[in-house]
Length: 175
Length: 233
Image (cartoon, rainbow over all chains, first blue to last red; front, side):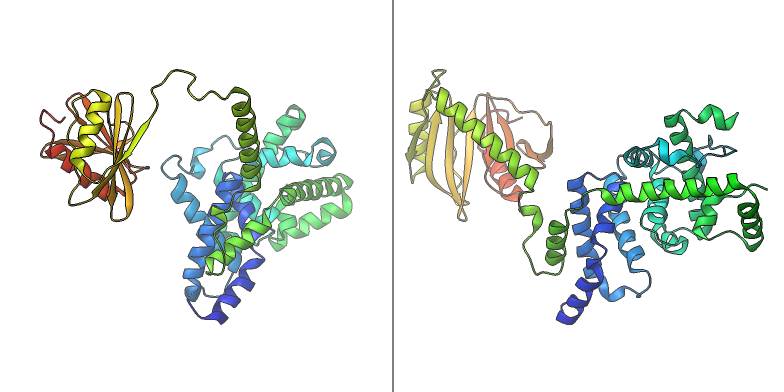
């Protein structure tokens, strides 16, 4: 891709996604320095492949490149858990969110999110933080929308349980 | 029927589920509180994530690099590293100024000479160290430009295609830790996979080749081993 117009078009399109890419990289467990490097690698690869981008879901396309790069980095050290590896998910009944906002600091919520397995926290981050649609998130994670839905559901329940423990509300709700 | 308020906010309930949810919201104050609490939680989560600092300046540089317009930000010192580096440099300068002693432990001083002949460099190094050293000559790959000695360690300097390459000799035995082993007819050359430094053992001496690229380093190592008079393992 050497055409100056294409370069300009690429830069304009991607500029607004830089912060999103960085945040997603951080959520994937990258340190600030690693996240920066990961974004740069993503930008280089995306630029090289700009001709092949189909014009749909730019954010999803970029995050998918970033995610693949990150997975290559960590594959040797870690395995992504499958959905079946977390059998402890139970849906707690009763009011929960009611007065939670008053009990937790935002930073603690984020720390609890970061403690979740990658596949769940990424689903939550894409949809709840970056406000992507299920379809866009499915494009990123390269899974069907139904899988996004189940990861979200499970992830949110896990987050909910962690937050319950944090606030000491677990006994009140699950009894 | 239990309502998943998260999916309600996401707008992905089925029409039937939504009818039930809307009915609950109209009739049940606790359902309304639950929904409001969830919205508050999601807002707090989002705000917290968005509040994390993002190095926009450097990311913009990264974008310019990706399209071939700018300098690589990876080669520019990050502010935190720069600050740490300056602090360390200042601390070192203060310590150095307060405690400077040109030779506090009585190490023998380094002696350095320029040579154009490997034979002359070898003779000088043997005399200075008092050791019987392996003759090191990289011709025709590289030409001798100098040598330096420090106690019982000698280092021969060569110009290999315009690059200064050092071959250091000392009483040492190198192991393969952190290195890749390259077997040769005369023994093993060990190459450090990150630094491209080459190590080899010859008799009671260990040799280190540094300053070259990996391929040249291994070639030099092989040449040295060919000249090793004893078991070069």
